[in-house]
Amino acid sequence: IVLQNCHLYVSWMITLERLVEEMDPKKVHKNFRLWLTSYPSPHFPVLILQNGVKMTNEPPKGLRANMIQSYLADPISDPEFFDRCQKQPQWRRMLFGLCFLHAWLQERRKYGPLGWNIPYEFNESDLRISVRQLRLFLTMFDDVPFEALRYCFGEANYGGRVTDDKDRRCLSALLAEPISAAAIEPGFTFSSDGVYCQPGAATHEGYLESIRALPLMQLPTAFGLHENADITKDLKETRELFDAVLSTQARAGAGGGGGGEDVLDKIAEGIASKLPPAFDLDVAGANYPVQYLESMNTVLHQELIRFNRLTSVIRSSLASLRKAIRGLVVMSSDLEALGTALVQGVRPALWMKRSFPSLKPLGSYVSDLLARLAFFQGWLDNGVPTHFWISGFFFTQAFLTGSSQNYARANAIPIDHLGFDMHVLPANHDCSVAPQEGVYVHGIFLEGARFDESSAVLGESEPKVLFTKLPSLWLRPQREADIADRAHYLCPLYKTSDRRGTLSTTGHSTNFVMFLKLPRLEEQPQEHWVKRGVAALCELDD
Image (cartoon, rainbow, N blue to C red; front, side, top):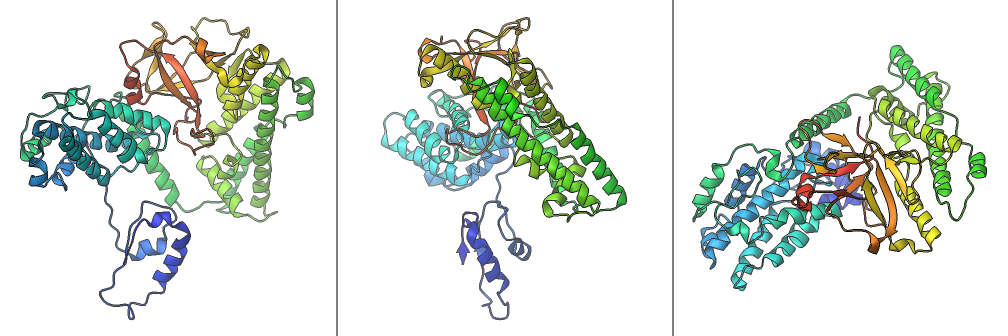
């Protein structure tokens, strides 16, 4: 019996576990075998994993090994399939470009969010159907239908797995070169470093020899990434290793011994003592009432409510934990998990249910929270800021909408006709006076590139510098038709560095904030920065 895609039927996994557990080897036929296929899933029964023989099928590491596997797999390895296509030069060269593209897409996953926001499971079935479609299209049409091929590969075969619109943009940029008229010319280079070129081979064995001559390891430049991406990859793998080690440790909750209890109690007391009192919503409502022409008052009130909820959860959970340490209340599973998180220095899951998105460790998270609370306390005490810390908002989109709404109401313009005319401000710009239209914002970081203040355009990252601070921005609401079209890169702004989130009703990820129009050089197309994986972040992980 073969049961495929078990990860799609989570509700039946309990029944499957019971059926397997009840199987009596003495009563089951000696030739009976149960085969199960599944993607990695936390819901797959552990009992079956422990009692079964496990096999995994993963793509080989490295562009060379990946392409060799593609050429040795069906149907490319079939001589009749490889040699009988009518348009032989185009067929062979486009097939090489397609196999390179397949390896390209799979290998970008190891660079984390720089490669893909979501690590898609591109596999051999995607390549297999694409190869058959390529042969069919070349047979049916006199001229090579590049646009149709890019559509089939980018929207159906590979693109059918892509759910993030920024990843779809990246996929389109990656498809543009390997599936093009230039790519079927001898000597065409698929990478900026010039290592991966179109071979001049004429046979299947000749292509295999050309592929085997490629370097065993490849630089990030082979994928269109900056050399710093290797550091990002190594940090990602190290972090995953440490997370795996921590997850296998025995739980050291609050009851793990006298010394541990004292340390945990001091940690809880230290965090609780740093929290300021809750915001007085009545006073805030009196000083900043709801007004038609000042939407920022509504934004402020909503932010204060969210932060009060978060600080209330933190205070009550820490108080309950300290009582549980003393034996005054029962140590629940939530409190035990909270104690373990405090000892390990990670963000407690109990807090994150009410918290703003963050990937910081516990100490940095608490410091960040206190800075956000201080920002809003300064707003209450000193009036509306002239220079907003955009990273400090719980719900950043509400702040941006409030800015647009103020302009729309003041000028009697429908808000859906507006967009932001964005200007990167020089370092010596005076932000102590609020602009007549829009807002000044700061607190944004760039990953994958830097902003060259001398030329006022995007520039390549400096060696070993993974993140740079973006200068202050002037977000000026204007009619979309009136916004000047300058050479720019549509840079996605995310709340955290993992870039992924759940799909919201806006059609974007919950982690996504907005697109920033950052100026670029005319001779550097937007696709260059798309391949680089350049994005803006509201906060870093440290």
